[in-house]
Length: 352
Ligand code: FES
Image (cartoon, rainbow, N blue to C red; front, side):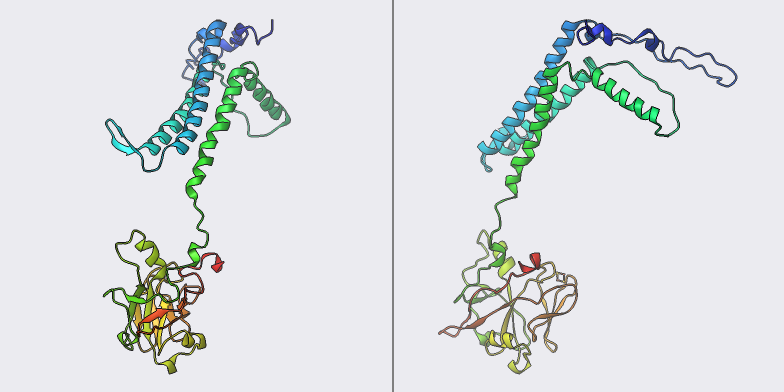
C-alpha cells in the first residue's frame, strides 16, 4: 500500500512529534523553552472517509466559484444598464451592479474558502521549526529547497486529489474572464468624434450671452466675444459635450495689423474667430489684451498672439489655437465656412 492510499503515512513521525520538547534552563539559556504543544491528529489524518468528504467540500466550493463566474458573465449580458431592483434594506439599486457584485464576490469567496478548507483539513498540519542559517545559497541549501518544494507538493496532495486540482485550476482560469467582459465598458470607440465639432458651412455664430446671431458690427475693436454654433441650446442633453469642442472666441483686429496671411483670408473685415479651448490641457481662454492682441489662458498662462495665427508666444501649450473660417451671409450675419480644419483643444496624439 502506498502513502497515497494510507492517510496514516501522512502522520508526523515520533521524531517530528517530539520536536520542541521542553528544554532545560542552564546558565547560557536561563529560560526554558516550553516547546510546541503535543500534536493532535485531525479526523482527516486518520479517517479516509472524512478526508474524502473534505475533498468533495473543497471541490464543491471551487465548482460554485466557476458557476458564479458564468453567472457574472450572464448578468453582464442580460441586465440592461438602467434596470433597477429593490433590495431590502439597501433600497433601489442597479440590477446590473448588484448582480455583478454578488456573482464576482461569490466566485472569489469560494476560491478562498476552498483553499482554506483544503489547507486546514487535508494538507499536512505538522508544525515545523528550523534553525537559522547563514544567508548563503550553497549547493546543499538549493538541494534542500528543491527537496522541501517537492515535499510540499506531495503534502498538498495535488497529485493525489485530482478532483481538487482540476476544479481549482478551472476556477482560477475562469475568474479572469470577468475582467475580460468588463473591457466592453471601455467602448464605444470615439471614431472621428474628436476631430469634428458642430461647426459646418452656413452655421451662424450666436452670442453666448444674448443667444442672438452676431453681425460684424456687434464686434467692436478691443472686445472679446464668445460664440456658439446656431442650434446648440443650453438645455440640450449634450450641450456640455458639444460646447467643450465648439466654443469660439471672436475679436476684431485692424486688418492691417493681421500678420498671418491665412488668418486674414479666413477673417471678415478684421473679425477673426478662434477656438476658445486652450491647446495645453483644454481650459477655456478668457483674457484678451487689446493692444498686443494676446489671448491668455488663466490655467498655466499660455499666451497666444491672435494677430499672428494665434501662435503660442509663451507657456506650455504646444500648438496655435485652431481658427474658424468665417464670412457673412446674405442677411449680414456672421457664419462659419466649415468646421475647424484640425482637432481643437489639447493636441491628442499630435493631432493624428
Ligand atoms: S490649459 Fe491653458 S495653459 Fe494650461
